[in-house]
Image 1: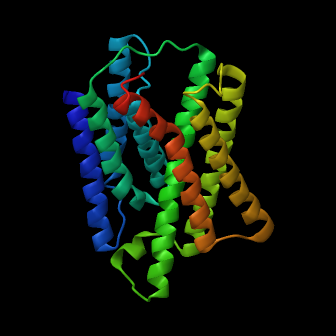
Image 2: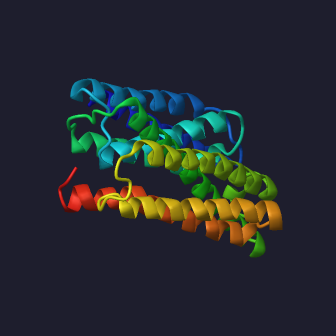
Length: 260
């Protein structure tokens, strides 16, 4: 309980410092220490849980928390280099919320997975975290474009990089996430038995649809120079399919039907 509470508080402190910086129109590095400490505490909470249950927990709330941890880690790492630290205003409270959900749910016996299925699972979680960051960048890109079109020069605009740089960062993040998602699907084909079984078929189909959309977006960017509203729509649609594939199916199976 103590380590979870400390992590949640540190996440909220980091977010509050970033909000203050945005209001002052000057991003400092004061947020970095509490954010990094929160990430370490978040990871430690999972390690302690796995030690208690005898294996990695991959149930709905644990997976949500791990994705939140991945997003917070990416935001802290990239933000430390001066790229989009303001993203932490959204990501850090989200990570705190997912960690709290994991803690409140309690621990269940860990999944005994061999190294092949562990590789598949961890690659999937990294893909979801990376592409979730890309989706947040897409939302910020859309908000920035709309504000500029309406000549509404809000304070938060100064916390964002120039439009072209933000768009470039979004596509680079999508590229990394697409590579991870490709690896996830390949390891699923190679290592997961009965990939099209009744309880997996919807997850597989939705994941493939998301992969096709992200791949089509990257192809359109390379071939036709897609950008702006088109890129935002494709990104958010692809991410919606991906979220439904994993968390939608798990929510129905575990929270509604009570199955593991």
